[in-house]
Amino acid sequence: MSKIQRLNVSCIRNIQSALLEPSATINLLYGENGSGKTSVLESIHLLGTGRSFRSSKLDPLISHDDDEAIVYAELLGGLKIGLSKSRRRIHQLKLQNERQRNWESVARELPIQVLDSNSFLLLEGGPKPRRRFLDWGVFHVEHSFVNSWRRSRKAIANRNMLLKQARLDLAQLEAWDMELSTSADEVDAARRKYIDEFLPIFSQVYRSLGGANADELEITYERGWDSERQLTQVLTENRGVDCRYGATQNGPHRADLCLKLGKTNAVEILSRGQQKMLVSAMKIAQGKLLSQALDRQCIYLVDDLPSELDRANRAAVFDQLAGLGGQMFVTCVDLSAIVESLSNPPEMATFHVERGIITT
Ligand SMILES: Nc1ncnc2c1ncn2[C@@H]1O[C@H](COP(=O)(O)OP(=O)(O)O)[C@@H](O)[C@H]1O
Ligand SMILES: [Mg+2]
Image 1 (tube, helix red, strand yellow):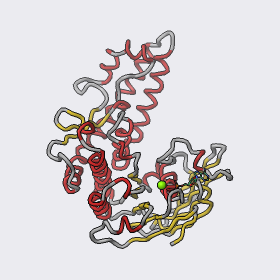
Image 2 (cartoon, protein in one colour):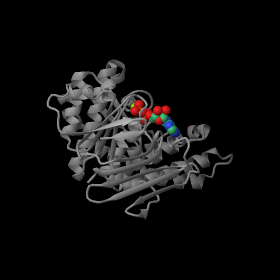
Image 3 (cartoon, rainbow, N blue to C red):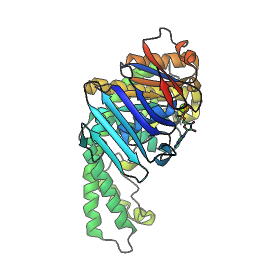
Image 4 (cartoon, protein in one colour):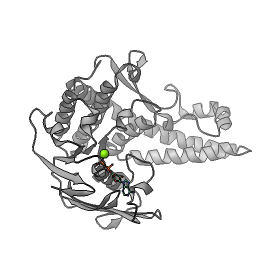
């Protein structure tokens, strides 16, 4: 069960030491700006993914006067996960006292979705965050995906190394082209299958949130190379370009999700608020699909909902999230801003955060 029953946080930002016994459903963290609410969400995210969601560097996360941050969680069902992270870049991740080489097993136990001001930027800019969004879903429902994905990454890295050399080693390049092509087909097939399952669920969630232009909105998956041709063929034909750039220009690392209204990118038409509802629907749909596929709910970390959505939309998103039946951690400055916006406030646990100290 992906529900945190007990959470210990030490030396993360202004939290020296905190113990939380969250509810299995909704947890509201409230307190003034800078009190440490987002840091609690960050700690959970760090434990489940190895990363923060608000900074790419980990050093700023460790409390100024300390050397090592620790997050420890016990899940409903008894599973224990512990992480220590030191300034010397040494980390130790344990699942049931067994040291983990990477986050794969822990991430499966703790599927985490974030809704914060950054995640609402999903539709803007380059494809990377959309690819990450897509792959989050594929990773959780299709277990063989991660191996194919790793093989494709390795093939691209090796291929790029060869492309940068003064004298091209054609035999080696062709061998990596083959390896990339085979793994890319697997990655593509898994992503395609996921999108086929995701789209109807998304459409239903988006409509029930009263999403704008629901009838015209179209999400399409682009695999990263010509849809009509084998990747080996594309790689061979583009060898000259790849050599010039010293990098592989086609492949699964270039995949994207395109969101369009007619011929125009949705981001150019929808208002900022409408985009937030669209992104919320995408994230809720992922949680829904996950629980259908795995009988497991993901944990939603929702940062500062009242400042992101207006009252009516906040209530709609909150209702949908609560309806998923998973565990939620929601932050806000003013508790009443959330409670008042709910039509029928469900049972929830509240935590007051003040200067890094958390009280119930
Ligand atoms: N590495 C650090 N060590 C100690 N304090 C930190 C560190 N990084 C940030 N802070 C402080 O910790 C607090 C973090 O607050 P945050 O979780 O963002 O608050 P909230 O979400 O409640 O507004 C801020 O007061 C910030 O100044
Ligand atoms: Mg905050």
